[in-house]
Each structure stands twice: as structure tokens, then as C-alpha cells.
Image (cartoon, rainbow, N blue to C red; front, side):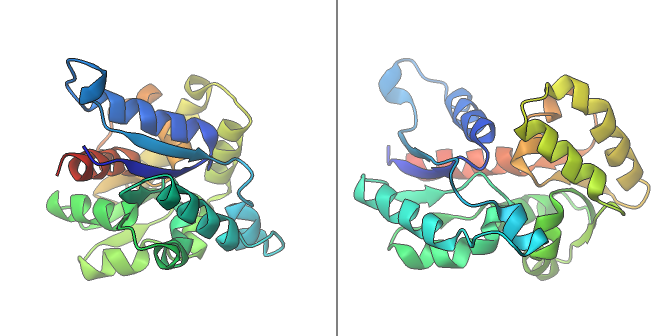
Amino acid sequence: MRPVGILGGMGPEATILLMRKVLAAVAAQDDADHVPLIVHQNPAVPSRIAHLIERTGTDPTPVLRDMARTLEAAGAAALAMPCNTAHAYAGAIRGATTLPFLDMIEATADRLAEGGARRIGMLASPATRLATVFEAPFAARGLVPVFPEPDDAVLALIRAVKRGERPETLAPALAHIAEGLLTEADTLCVACTELSLVVPSLPELPLTDSLDVLVGEIVGFARA
């Protein structure tokens, strides 16, 4: 199988969750049956929230480009990044190497469109909304993003995950936000991989998790 390079550390637990999900996605009989991953776990990537929301943080673009080049030099055959907000910098990452970039945003938009829903409730960082990460892919497929208003409660949950708070203690607050979105939306999109850590503790809800979509893209590319 072909190795996939992971631009990780945004955040570290979400990157580990991606690796676990890729591992679980393969019915392996031995070690060699698993997808080879080259993971650049770099928690020092400048804050996307500080750069996109607060407008005071350091631009993470140079660090992300260097990570992409490092993964290419290490032997990766494609790149993937388990951070929705960081896809605001996807163009710079694509331009840093000759490798294909497995775009989580485009793939998630495809999955949602296949499901037949039109109005999508977004469980996402406010930075994802401000950077209009999903707008063009959604518009191309006739999808409409619906964000919670205000979205400061979502940001508080994301920061709580980053602090290491237990997902099960955060699930009731996230479920409340999700249920509110479903009064206006047809289905939900978990568009922050920090929130993917909370999903197993949620009640049953109609949702698509962008991290699961990326796992499918990684496994599909590795096996192709």
C-alpha cells in the first residue's frame, strides 16, 4: 500500500484519533496489512484560531508548507490533514509539494451531497466559518451551511477538548447545540476534529463526521 503523510498536531488528540480510525478501518490479518502512515505530529503549528479569529496570531502557512515538504522527503505518496480549519491554508500546502492532497472539505461535501440533505448544520470552529472553508465546496453541490448563532459556545467546547477535558462531560453541551441546529438544518456535519473526540458520547443524531470521511479517503488512496 502507498504511504500517506499526515500533517498532524492540530490538535494532537485528533491526530491520534485519526490514526486509530485508519487502523480500525482495515480488516488486517497481520501488521503489513495496515495502511502506512507518516505522521508529522507538530503541536507547535501556530494557532489557526488566533490567526483567523483574533487577527493577532502568527500565520501558520510557512510551518504547514515545511511540514508538507518534510513528509514528501520522508516518502509520503499523498498528504492529508485532520483539521478542518487548517484547510483555509490548503492552497499553500498543495503548492509546497508535487504530492496529491486528500482534501477533507471537498470529500465531506461530496458525502453530504450524496446523502440528499441540503441544509447542513455545522458543528465547527468559528474560524472555519470566518475563513469560508466550506462555502465554495458547498455552493458547488447545492448545499447550504447553517452555523449556530452565536457560535462562542462551540469555540468554548473546542478549547475544552484542547485542555484535556473528558469528552463525556462535554457531550451534553454539544448535543444541545446540535439539537438546536436540527431545527433549521436537515442533517449535521461535525467539521472540527476536536469535536470528533466527543461524537462517541453523543446521543444518536443524523450526522456526518469529516474525520471519518478523511479516513475513507486515506484508506482508499493507500489501497489504490
